[in-house]
Length: 154
Image (cartoon, rainbow, N blue to C red; front, side):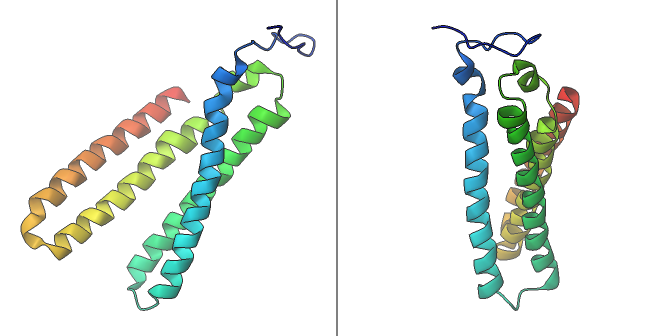
């Protein structure tokens, strides 16, 4: 298989470029699809639970806002990789905002949601307090690992 011609001064596009960037493209598509699911869930929540406490509503809408920001960053990175940097393999090698978006923001969001579920488990079944503590501890360890991992890459 022949390599495509790259603009002057750039390394040639490798023949296995699909294997290199294909998973990133699929991940971007899945991010947009799952954001659509989140938008529908948020709308249904807004319609179905108007009497929820302000702090619960604030948490839900904060999650939606945070995920909106993460989806926008993912879209910007996808545009940088596959449109503005098309044919330039050096663009794919630069981390850009990816390390911020995926491990750091994802870890913060996962921790927020998992701690909320720990709270719900504790509220529903007070005798399962130990389960809430175990889930919270694992969530905190996971979030710290994701934040450290994202910080070391960028």
